[in-house]
Length: 476
Image (cartoon, rainbow, N blue to C red; front, side):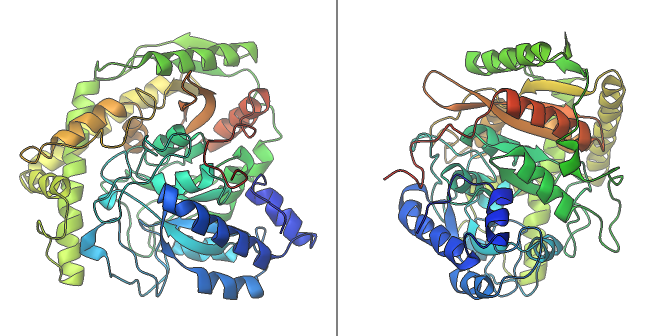
């Protein structure tokens, strides 16, 4: 069988359409790649092989007809398939329905082959759940994949699939994209529905989408999946035209803000600073106007308010699961950090939760005014390159310390979850050790179009598809 690991989703769909390869062949290659690489990467936790083979035998029509795809094991519900959220509490929980996003992905013609590894309930920016073990970064097996979409990112970086489902509540698309050398766009709040299970999560922090090797795949997937569902509490303003059309449109001269320093005053690694400075120079060379700016809000006030929502979300998760499944969380089935986060969440009064929400909304107004001056805002994606596995381990007597370390590692990404802005991590650079170092561009609310135009221009100017990690399906 020929090797198709260098193709993106769009390219594979064209090969299937032209009958140069069959869907069944692509599915078998994907399964073979998982079987060969997963003992090393631990990226996949739930195979869906027989259903994928059956679907590939008679693939449905659609723009991505017959192309294999992976689902992240948070929110990617498939009827009859277990959905664990990386927790022993749900290790044998089987969904009785499909998520609306899954319906749309399958309507587009994608073949769902497996589900990917995640940290427990997505609360950490590394994928090292006790239940399934750590996912390994294909660039360096001792390093984190990031999280919470770490299994998806590892699989895409390794060439198992060209793109995979991901979602983002504090950076969970952008962080693993940065760690694994991928493109990762967090869309505008409400761009993709969370139906039928949820209206929003933690006041709208969580967004659905994907990690991809190419910008055009991200644009096409968003075209095929965006839009509200009946009963959604709100939704993003509809785009003026398909996102794939934006890729052929020059961005013009953009006004880009540049911020290097951490919003909370924590240390930013020289590699992260070097990457963002190089991105700023590249933008200037392409004709954009880049202006240095301080962080426009109080980072400490933002972090304090965000943590209230984050910990309340942990309490909601465990209390909600107890109500829906009858399963009570305790030390036998839930990790110490999750229990500690939930305990902290339950300690907040209703008024303190509403106050935190009000503070975030006030800060978001300030960011909104800041963005009236700029078309995009450039920062590091992360405060340091991918850290070693185990870096977020915390003492048994103080599990919450892992969250403090997480805030130091990823101080730049959570803001866009609170503001609802679209933001993307781009794999433009790597450090002297050969590790990817991402840079983040945030856009105005509802304006993925400008980000896609800029991303296409930067991808053409500084292409990354030729950079292959140590673990890749084309390598023995």
